[in-house]
Image 1 (tube, protein in one colour):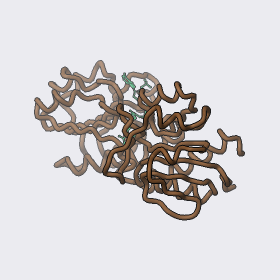
Image 2 (cartoon, rainbow, N blue to C red):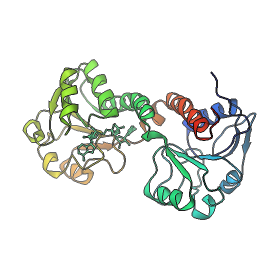
Image 3 (cartoon, rainbow, N blue to C red):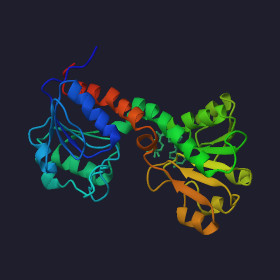
Image 4 (cartoon, protein in one colour):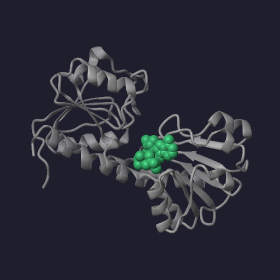
Length: 295
Ligand code: NAP
């Protein structure tokens, strides 16, 4: 059954092609959108000239998946001039207003608590993270293919972390014929990787196999590729770090050693914005309806 968001008042601030798809979908469901920083138009969409204008009288504010940075700068692919949130701006929202964002950095979390806003981190929701892992894994492999002088097939690939992204990525690499080794700390994750026919290794034992790798994909948001391990890797290894900034690699030391290490954030939005927008469109309206008890 199609959701009916008729009359629900929403604000959208900034974003990229994903939020364009989401905005169009929300408007089709009947929501009244006030928008700043997105090239959208049509029925139920009102474009505002200033960020502050979108916030008055809305039931929810939808921020972009990457949200805002440490200085509260709003991620915006379409506005050249940077714009920022502030306590003053957000205090235009009534207490209890929903605040959707992909991932919230500490300053936004603090403001949400201070102003009594109901923060929903969409990318923390398992269903979204799993769906999002599909374009993330494809994007990581695409990046590796563009950088490696060898095929993925037959390459010796490590996947660090075996959560939602690591599992999808390992399956994709193995299906492409990569000799895939999963590195994880959890015995149950290692057991699952073994069951899937993948190689397994603990972080403790990584040094033992460090010479035998062509490409490393990191999904662990903690420093796992530190100096000690980097120094044992072959210099022509490629590191693709998917973990949220600052990643899990000592990039400075990798550079000193001549190892190519790439922090690759926001892959779904870059390689498959339409799919990523559809994933948001599947979940945000339902969450809105649940939170506003419209169901
Ligand atoms: P997840 O499901 O929570 O998986 C994280 C994995 O890392 C788990 O195996 C976890 O093991 C492991 N881990 C966490 N902290 C660790 C530590 N200190 N030492 C060793 N292992 C540790 O997360 P996810 O959804 O796969 O996302 C992983 C990261 O990728 C996040 O930072 C996310 O923001 C990012 N991401 C980036 C993109 C992109 O486009 N670049 C796309 C999607 C996600 P335990 O279960 O034992 O904790």
